[in-house]
Image 1 (cartoon, rainbow, N blue to C red):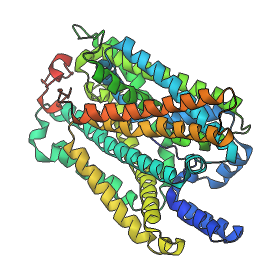
Image 2: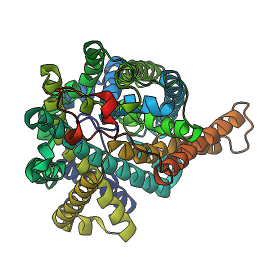
Image 3: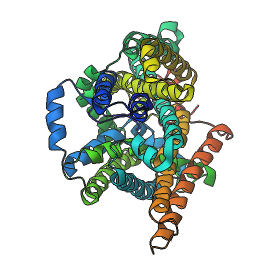
Image 4: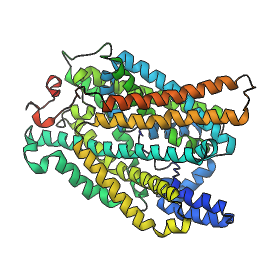
Length: 492
C-alpha cells in the first residue's frame, strides 16, 4: 500500500465503525440515532476529510470525473514500493522477465478492480468492507480486516526502515564512512529518536488530518526516484555492472510476482473511488483503471530499468540508498522522502489501530456503549503496542527487502483472494445452477484468481522464511571514502 500509502481524501472504513452502525441497525435503533453515532465516529477518522471540510463536502456532492478518479488511484498505489523496483528487477531475472511479470500482474489486477466495482453496484456498497460483507458475509469481512491490518503494519515498518536508510545516507555524506562508530549516529539510535520525537506523539491523536497539508510533498517524494534513477544513469556512466538476462532460479522469479504487483495495489480504495465518481458506471471506471495502471506501469518501468542498469545486481532494495547525498539533486529527494515517511506513518497507524480495535470488539462481542466507553484507553494501548513493536522490528531488520516480501505476501490476499471469492459468490447468488452460458467461465476465473492469490502468498512466504540465499545490502558505514557509491563494493 503502496501500497502502500492511503490518500487522506479517500473514504476509509474499518470494523470499529461497524461496531456502531451494524449493531445499532440490528437492535432496531432509528436512522437518526445511527446517523448521529456515525457522525461522532467521523472525528476519529481523519481520512474522511481534510482541513477544508466544507470544500470536500461540495466536491463529494459533485462527484469526481473519471480522470480525477484515475489520479486518486495512482496517488494511492504510488508508495514506498517504488524504491524496491530496481532490486526486484534483478531478482526477477532482468528487465525482460520483470516487465513480463508486471504486464501479467497489471492485467490480473485490472480484472480484480472491475470485480470489486461490479460487486459494489449489486448492493450499492460504498467501501471495500461493505462489498466483502455483502458477498462473503461477516467472517469474510473480518478476515479481510485482519489482512489489511497486517498490510498496514508492514508498511509502517517499511517507513521506519526508509527513514533510517535516508538518515544513513545523510550522515555518510557529512561524517564519512565511519559515522556509525559514534553511537548517536547509528541507525538504531537515529531511527528510535526520530520516531519517538516526531511520530509517537501523533500516534495517540484521534485525528491526524492536519498531515494532509504534506500531501503535495508526499507525491513529489514518491515521484522523485523516477527522476533520480534517470539522472543517476547518465551522470554516473555505469561500467562493468552485472545485468541478468534470466533468473537464477524459478522460485525467486515467482516470488517477485507479488513484490512487483505490490506497487500497483489499490484494491482497498477501488470501491470508495468508484462510489465518488460523478457518473458511476463500469465504462467510466474501466477508463480510470486502465489509465491509472498505464501511468504506474510507465513510472515503475522507468525506475526499475534505469536503476537496475545503473547498479546491476548490486542494487540495494532501497534504490535511494545508492546515491550520494552530497549531490544537491539527491539531497532534495532524501529530505523530501524523510518528511513523507514521517507524515505517512501516523495515517497508516491510525487506520491499523481502528481496524485492530474493531476486530477486537467483534471477537469480544462488545456493545457500542462498551466500545465507546473504553475508546481512549484502547486507543492509547493499541497505539503504544503498534508503535513499539514496529519500531523494534524496523531497528532489527537490516534490509527493507525482507519487509517487501512479507508485505507482498499479505497484500496478495487483498489483491486476488478476496475479489476472487466475491466473484464466485456473486455468480452463485445470481445463477446457482450455472445455467447461463457465461456463469461457468466466471466461476472458473474466480477460482483461477483466488488460486493466483493463494500461490503468491505461499511462494513468497516460502521464499522469505525458508530461503537462505544472501541478501543484497548496502552498509554505508563500510563504503570507501570517495564521495560516490561504488556499485561493485556495495554487496557485502
